[in-house]
Length: 160
Image (cartoon, rainbow, N blue to C red; front, side, top):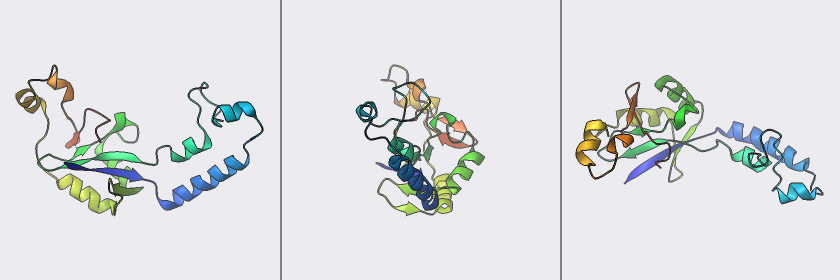
């Protein structure tokens, strides 16, 4: 059992996004049957399947999984294939620029979260550990945690 942590925008940022959403909704041409049929995906770039609705844009990147704390394991970070940050310095800057919430909806002070996560110690799923303890898997080395600037980083981006 573990606890997942997420980065969410500051209230001021969400307020600005909300005002933009309201304006975009006001400007929707609700008489356009093709827009209605397409769930009001009005994003101009991309093909028909990649377009976003105003709501899609509003919620995009609001909740970003930072990582997971589990008893007995070193804190495991999620680097999202370097989408938001690619090293420890960028990660910490990103965390401090937003808010932190756990999977139970409890908000944490970003600096206190960072201190907890950096000091949470335990097992690392390195290649030796995975081969020794997961020999039943077809390719246990495919699931080896990465190390970036001394941080345990999941080899997967989908491990909530």
